[in-house]
Length: 297
Ligand SMILES: N[C@@H](CCC(=O)N[C@@H](CS)C(=O)NCC(=O)O)C(=O)O
Image (cartoon, rainbow, N blue to C red; front, side):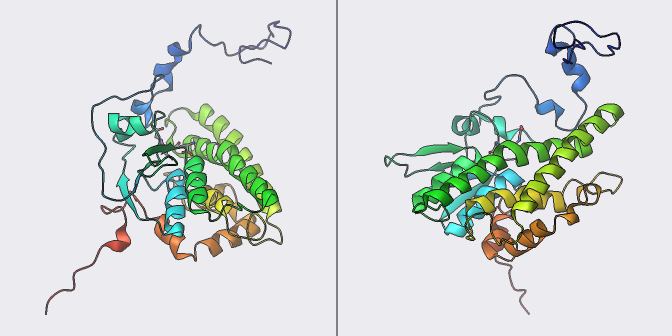
């Protein structure tokens, strides 16, 4: 059945209960109401003329400590690259500032600039996994560059992460926590649809990790760094205001292999630092660098 209620031959069913209006624009007002709704528009591009901050380091990171953001900061911390981190408040619409849009025309964090690109010129970087593979290849670490089979397997998990795990988990979170309060049926439908898909994705990952330490070739790689943040988001994030957490709601503890793997990754100092970069909770974009003054006696 099509969204319009017709069957595959175009014939209308008797039980049609929903018909789209002629244009999607007619639905926009009805779809508003959540706390991010004012950000949503059907067009791209800058909305205000504001330049990006720049530091002195060769690498400039523009991010926020969301799962997509911390994928990149975990890698930069693992690589030990010198970089300046700048917080982009997506709640305040800073992803639509002209400076940010000139780096990422898609207006989403994370984005970065490497002043020393492949041709020696500055290069603009966007899409978290593309940024990760760029830096891993540049520094030739965590990328299986000399093992074609492992490299291919790693890329498959990275594509899986970008096309499945991230978007489905994000959509689940939207319907579970952020969608408008009064849209009960819509929220139940979206929460069930994406909640089931998130469970299936976790099951794919959990079965793969049976008897393994890392996702690919028993070696820590970009695949682990890319897949960890969204799984950890399910463990700790998306708490409905009534107190029910995504972890309880989706029974995330049943994915024993993934929980063991995530707990192990969290032991890594670079992962601990990476998850704090551009945190909502801290003024400083690398809070561990802040020297706490010793009170004078
Ligand atoms: N596929 C992109 C997704 C990036 C993304 O969705 N970023 C979110 C935060 S996690 C964002 O910037 N949202 C702001 C907006 O949609 O206006 C990537 O992996 O970099």
